[in-house]
Amino acid sequence: MVFYFKARPEAGDYTIFMGLDKYENEDLIMYGFPEDIWFHVDKMSSAHVYVRLNKGQTMDDMSEGLLEDCAQLVKANSIQVYTPWYNLKKSPSMDVGQVGFHNPKLVRTIKVEKRINEIVNRLNKTKVERKPDLKAEREAVSAAEKTERKVQLRDKKRREEMERLEKEKQAEIRSYKGLMVQEKMTSNRQIASGSKTLQELEEDFF
Image (cartoon, rainbow, N blue to C red; front, side, top):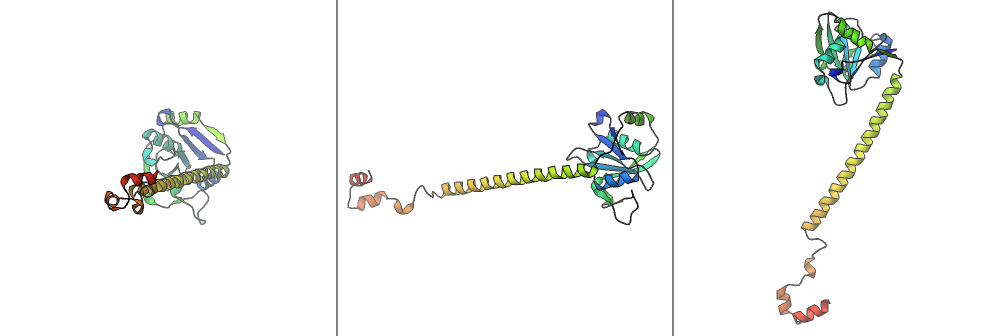
């Protein structure tokens, strides 16, 4: 079971979510999205709370209001840490729900002084319970991203080929290839010194 909440409207259209227990947390850890930001009480047992940002956004794009909504769902009167999902480190020796970090520099802290009932109540009014197939959702997104990368790569190759052909065309124009061949040109001096008159040459041409 996963619980979904809507962040305050002024923060933007963001979904905050958390697992029912540590086993759901394991699935969320395994099948997260690069846009997910993970929240947890520092060095204590607490809920694993996530917020899914928009593509291309980072922690730096999170407003204070969005941070506060996430932090209030984790635990009051606590020091919390948050970091991108891809920075979560899971090893076989860790307990269920336990994580570490690949890069400590990507971990930030936030202090929650007290529970603000107004915020928690507002979030709970938007609460929705679902049993998502997290693996299928992640695989579907991965497949779509793979297709998009293929399209982008194909477009890139097409642009590069068009640019190459255009460069060759411009180089040919600059060097007069196909337009004026030196061996076939006749100068005025050659005309004057030849046995044929200009009129005769013109008649030969026509």
